[in-house]
Image: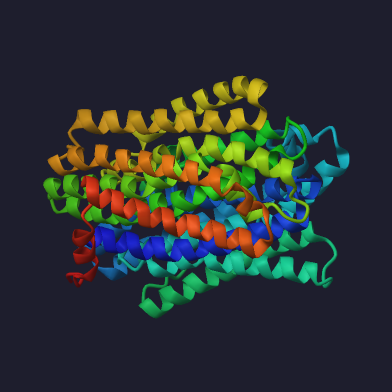
Length: 518
């Protein structure tokens, strides 16, 4: 099946990027711990990164890909490229104005982004300065989203999936140079690294588009009918496609009101939680959208329903065991990854508690990425935004209440609950409209996937108790133990899934061995 091969390509490169991201975060935890500089940099990185995810993996991709793919199929390459150039010209002007305005107004924006920092003038000033340095990253990422959407429409997913690797390489280099004494301001070095990495990613994607013969030229910015249609589809999708990211920004704002280190605890916990979300959820969503757009455009509604069912099945096959593992042994994972240098035992425990709470909503985060393409492929971005708005209200109310009892863990738990509400409402609306029709295979395999995941979680929880001392030894011992748990858990789940009928390994092997059709 072409969908699974596309997901494997996207997921494979994303996995490499996430592994490098863990190396980056291990160095970050070692150098900065969970103190003032770490909190300031994470807020500075979160703000432009929020828009990156919203554009690259959310609203812009959801609106642009169906329109570009439709023109490509009906009118050919030149009209499609002309439309992309018109969209890029308007997008560049809007982003330049937004970036300049935000950088000038940054001291006042901090009262919204990190209100808890206001009482500490030094922390507030550092956060403001670092955010100004990182903010140009947004412009590069939005333009890269446009070019990446063109490549995705041609089913060339590798370049866009591999681009984030450059970000991690640049930040790792910045940390190593700081550690070697070349730079003596780690926060500022990292912030400059973010901006430079954004430029490097854009140049890399532009070169791939040039080699593919689809690189655009920038005309005079005009609101052509195609651009107006794009903006109409984007407006509601900015919230609808990015509800998880909006919730995470709310988390940062609320966490800034808590004790020092709370922002860092949520950041490191979210980084671990983002691994399966990025490898599975984002990959499925990006690969599914152009496929559904083509099938619906050709009138193949049955094929679209089948693709949606397989996307749900495949994403849950990979996500449920990952969620079970994160809930079963959060402290060994966090200790093995981050507990060294300035990141002490108390920081590891606080981060592990947040990770367990985030992981409870992991299947919901992935379902949102899997279900929203069914709306976007039908050029419906209004319905997801209504559902997203409701979920955001629930998240804010719950977070404000639960943080009174469980501090930063309450914020993470509220995010998980609101994600489940979002996913359930998306599923109900699709069901009522007849856009999703679970087939017999999905009905049979989904409960078995849940059973195999539950057994895996119990076994990992018991094993983590037995081998707890192994996670507190030297670095090499922690690394080997954690690797054995990861690969051992994956192997155990593969056996459990085969035994209980949650998946057919031979079927998956056949799919990936089969040559793609033209």
